[in-house]
Image 1: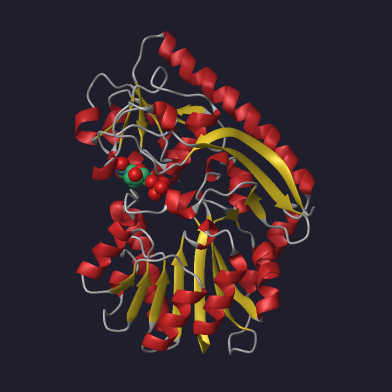
Image 2: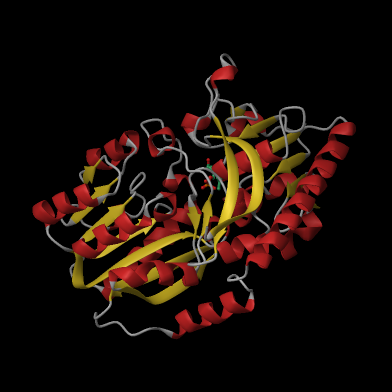
Length: 404
Ligand code: TMP
C-alpha cells in the first residue's frame, strides 16, 4: 500500500451538519478521521471519505462572501485574470454564493455548484449555474452548450473531491489551447508549520502541495506554470495550470516553492509522524488553558462556528462545559448546535457582552480581521485564545506581534 496513516483524530461528525436541537442525538453520524501520506505521489489524504451528498447538499451553511477578506481576495484575483486573458470565458467549479464569478460578465460565465441552496443564489442573480457535482458528464454538457473555456477556476473545492483523475480529465477537455486552470486550496506546508490539524475534516479529502499536484497532473499532459502561497484560509496554495504545450513559461515562484517544500521535507513520511506528535501536545495544552479559565468561573466564547473547529472540539472533547457558546455572523448557522460537540451558536450581537472575557479564536484564519473588529474587547481587558501555531492567550499588548 502506498498510503500510510500518520494521524488519528478520532470519531468525527459531518462538519456541516449543524443541529437544530439536541433531540435524537443517537442518530448523529460519525466516522473515523485518519490522515494518510502517499509515498508514491506525496499526496496527503483522508483514510475514509464521507459520501459527498452528506456534506454538500441544500443545507450547506458556509457563505464565502461572509468575510471581507475573502471578497477582496477574489476581487484581486479576478482583476489579475482579466489582465492575463482577453475576453474571459469563465467556468467556476464550486461557485458557492458567487463571490468570485460576480466579478465577471453573466453572459460568458458558467458555474457548477452542487449545493442547490447556493446554486439558486447565483442563478437568481443571472449566472448560468448547474446544481451538480463536477464530473465528466457535466463537463461534456458544458462543452456542447457553452464551448471551451479560457479560464477555469476553483477555490476550496478540488480538495473536496475524492476522485482527482476525473477532475483533471474533465478540466483538460474543456480548457482552451492557451486557457488557464487556476485552483486554490489549503496548503499542506502551512498545516505542518502552523500545527493546524483542524484543516483535516470531512470536506478536505486531500491537502495539496506543489509536489503532489505535479505528480497528479503528469498523466494528463497538464502542467503547473505558476504557483502562489496565499495567507487565506490559514495558508493556501494557488496553482496556475495549462496544457503541456501551451504558451506559458514556468515562473521563478514555482522553483522557489519546490525548494521550500523539499527543505521542509514534505516528501518524507517522518515529517508527518513528527507533526502527529505535535498535534497530541497541542490538544493537551489547549485543554489545560481552557480548563484553568473555567476553574475561575469565567465565560469562554468561540468566535466563528467554522468547519475546522469541529475537528478541534471533537478531537479534544470540548463541549459547552468549556466553551459556553459560539458567535457567528452566518445567519443559517445561528440558533443551531455544533455537530458532535453540541455547543450553541448565536448571533455576535447577542453574544458579546461585558461578561465575556475570553474568546476562543475558532476562526483563527481570520485573526487579523477579527482582532481589528474586536479591538475594543481587548482594550476592555478581554483576551483571545488560539491554538495556532501553539495554544496561548493573546492580550492587547500582544496585538502588534500577532497581526504584523
Ligand atoms: P471559514 O473559516 O470556514 O471561512 O468560516 C469562518 C466562519 O466564521 C464563518 O461561519 C463566518 C464566521 N465569521 C464571523 O462570524 N465573524 C467574522 O468576523 C468572520 C471573519 C468570520
